[in-house]
Image (cartoon, rainbow, N blue to C red):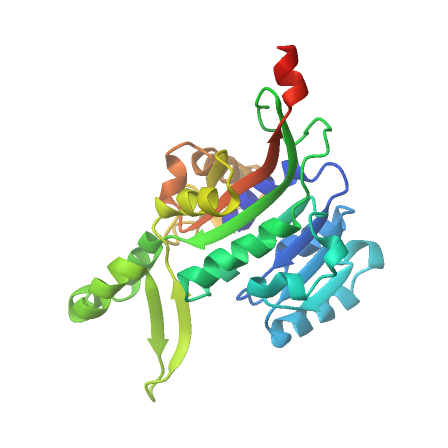
Length: 284
C-alpha cells in the first residue's frame, strides 16, 4: 500500500491538464491500479496488457464503474510493439506513458530497450506551453509529455531470499554467479519447466538506460517503497489515517531523495521530452 501511494503521488503532479495515458501492466493480480485511479480523476486512459486473463479482470472491474471512472480503452498489446497496437496518428500525442511492469518481465536487454523506445515514441513533444508538473523548471527549456518506467532492483531479490530461504544463496552459488551478471531469475516447476521469469536490474544502470534510449539528460529516479523495502511495510499497511499517511510522506521523501531511491525494491525512472527554446536563448 505504501508503494502504491508513493507511486501515485509521483505521477499526480504530471496529471494537471487532462492528459491521455497509456498504462502497461503485466503481473499485478488486480490489473491497472494506476489506470483506474487516473481515470477516476477525470483523465483519458488507455490500458494495454499482454495477458488476456488480466485484461478480462480489468474489463470486469471497469464494468462495475460509471463510464467517467473507467479507462477509455482496454487493449491487448505487446509493450515491445506498441506501434502495432495504436494508430499511427496517436504517436507523440500522450501526455504521460506509464511502463510499470514490462521491464522486469521481458527477459532480453534488447527487447527491454525496445519497449522503452516504443513507449517514448508515444510521448508528446514540447508544445511551447509552460510546464506544470511540480518540478523546478530548467531555463530556456520547453517540456512535453513524461515517461515513467519501472524496474525491480537486483538487490530486492536478495532481500527476499534472506527472508524466505537464506541458505539458498550458498546452495545455488552457480545460479547466483550468473544472476550477478545479468539479473535474470527463472523459476522452474517440479517438471523442470520455466514457470516464472523476472529480470532484476542494477539500480545504477536504470538512469543510464533511460538517458541512452531517450536522449534526455534530466532523468529523475524514485524508489516507490522508500525506507520500507523488503516487506518492511507489513505493519505500516495496517495503520489508518494520519498514522498511515505519515509513513507515506516519509517513504516519498526518502524515495525521491538523490540517493535514497536506491534503497527501494521497485524503482521508477521519470523523464520528460524537452526542447531548448532558441528564441529565449537569443534573448538572454
